[in-house]
Length: 297
Image (cartoon, rainbow, N blue to C red; front, side, top):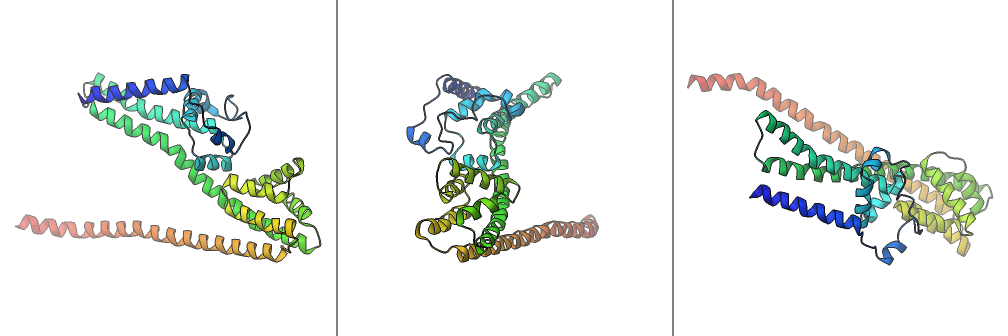
């Protein structure tokens, strides 16, 4: 009865996914307008460039997952930080979930051929658990890597603020200082800054507006605050050199505090192996005496 129940649930879920693939739901207009790409064509859908083996195998499943509203806004920003195609990420989730779903069944079949198969509920529960783990693990990996990339961006942003402050002290204007300092550095952060400033030049927009959109798109509040500070100089003629210096100092202080907290957390985690080693040593020393006392009774 239990096996038939789980098999029925799996069959219904499979038919539901097939129906979603054949007739995908249309997203709401507000969702389309608030997407970061904002264009009528999503470059992450279709094609195999950059998707790898997961894109080739799980392309159809990725379309289904996008049809039901995945990924969420937070995960979408994490993927944008990592420059990872949405379709490739969803395909990877689908492939790992399918592998987790099928592996216990194959193992059960091999054990059945050897005459040592466990009861049916065991592979069914294992398949559900492994499928859930395979579906969630890519999101956890993306979140961890995106957090590291944002921290790298903050370090580069503090350097960028110092360069802008020095350029402004030399008599340059706000726009020229932003463009000149962005052209100096290398790496992910400076590449994104140069791209945002180039977009501002092409669409005849202000640099602080594009920097604010970039900060919101990448979920980096420090960049949004920088855009707000620079906009004061553009709109109200405020002197921002002192504000930029103070913001760079505050950003470095925050990074130093974060590094100290991470170091203290690592030190506390190192105490756990020492404690386990100490307990093992006590067991190793005390077990012979305890065994001798128990056998003597």
